[in-house]
Image (cartoon, rainbow, N blue to C red; front, top):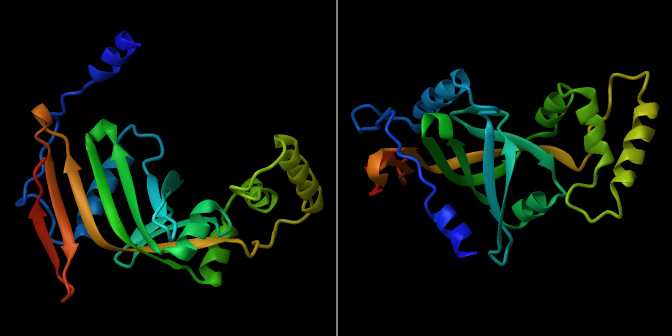
Length: 218
């Protein structure tokens, strides 16, 4: 056990491919996100839109999982899920979230904190109808986060729904599935640097609607 512990303790990377200074950073965090996200798209990262989202229950018990970003802009960041999943239930109780993008190839991460709002039924319908047919059937077939007796239950649901919609391209979006918009109040851009002396720039939205930029100690 001690040898395994030492092996884990000795795992480390020396980050040194880039820097992040106040003079380099955009004044608007959405513009800074766009620049870094475009770099991630050009890199060899698989699913650069994968983000960890942390939610908490009304009692403050946290949980986290990885979802896919499906849109971003000055209004915020969007993703889609089952409203009856654990994260959906927690968001109904406590609408504040934190999301994290980690791009190891670029030695970068972005942390974002904000409040979620449900997207309109029209927006959710528009995205749902663009999904592959199998994904739409999956949204109908799976009671996400609920305890089930076996995988066969899901497979049987998929088989039944596949037959039902075999000759139909239009599949109705279930009421329990849709989108969220995360409206940020804080960003942190992290660039790995040698000796763990990383660059960290924080953007925080002030009461007058201006983004304040501050450097955080590594």
